Length: 469
Ligand SMILES: Cc1cc2nc3c(=O)[nH]c(=O)nc-3n(C[C@H](O)[C@H](O)[C@H](O)COP(=O)(O)OP(=O)(O)OC[C@H]3O[C@@H](n4cnc5c(N)ncnc54)[C@H](O)[C@@H]3O)c2cc1C
Image (tube, rainbow, N blue to C red; front, side, top):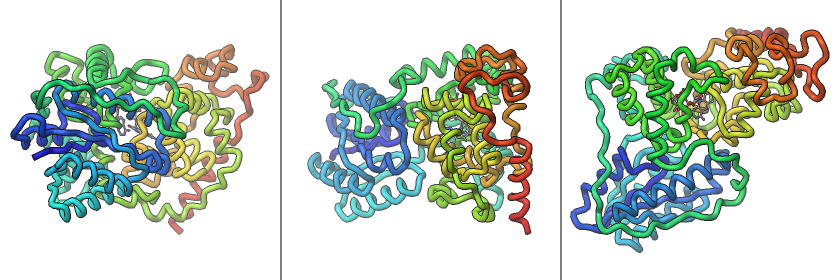
């Protein structure tokens, strides 16, 4: 009886509940197979970036190699969209005599619809489907209030999450033992059309590389995380997000490694702060799960749907290309455009600038980030954008608008980050670099600020206040 593991957002052999279960069910050698379905048109619709697609392809190949060592063949199936993937999966199962399909759940609305349709069709065909809650440390939907309601505020969610972790002491799913002789892996070679132009890879490929990076971060920077994480010029954060967003690493693996580092005498506070970020990730995944409207471009706070956003016009272009005349915003946007990654502090600064100073709809910013990020992840991207725009759950209050110049003075005091990404400003002193429009001549080619920060902040607050009337 052939067991098929359908890999999607969980590109790893270690700590993978669907893979472990399939191998447990198989009672003879050679009965476990795996597949990965390419859906480039759907990826376009979901605004996936070339960086992400190429990361996924490289890691799907790496996974095929790992599984081949275990005697498990991973087949690549070409479909265009999720709808087509159902029939393709069906014929794949019939060709290989599959009796049971295993997959780890995903929580975007289209993914859920697809999985429901697969289950419906496979029930008709008499093929069993088994799904697993893998994406978060505590299974999605399990962290609820005393009234069995989802949490809408992070702090009580995180308290409950920590109690759950202490009670349950999550463990890792073992890498399965070989299911047969090692085999030759299939390999993806052709990058789908439209995804060819990616920046150079941000991180190394493979599960082993991800674990090396995790260990290095915990050993070298984890302890100082609390003090360093907000300074983009420092190597203060883990840069593990591409692995986490695509399931090369799991939240459980991160939590357990960080707790081990704590027990070995690592700086407790720093590591606790880092674990808190893994909790934020779980929080946003839960929010996406409980509120499917978030997948449909809707605000968490329905009353904010009435906000009259400005026409994006040339301001949106200036923001995208990093030519707003606000150095920290421009440096951050250029980092995003050139690497496919942006530091968390700067994601907040650029998102607030777009939504509060330019008053451009957060949905446009969300889609633009997605189209560039190698770690584009619906739950966290939507959560971060709605936080910044004050339309989300536990969001920044609408009257707390970051001033990007003050943020720059505080978190890039020597202007090192700005100098790296906005070389036209490299020669300015540490004071002027944050706001070159103040006094003196602006270096050639660098624009004046496209918006008045104080006036635009006032206007944004007024528009939010008007919602109450
Ligand atoms: C507007 C906006 C958009 C964002 N879009 C994404 C996105 O598409 N994908 C994504 O993974 N993260 C997103 N984030 C969250 C965060 O910025 C990134 O996870 C983080 O910068 C990744 O860098 P790191 O791996 O060095 O993080 P670290 O600081 O080392 O944190 C470790 C891990 O915790 C998780 N994490 C950290 N901060 C957050 C957070 N605020 N919310 C949810 N999870 C978090 C990530 O998985 C991260 O890899 C966004 C934040 C904002 C404000």
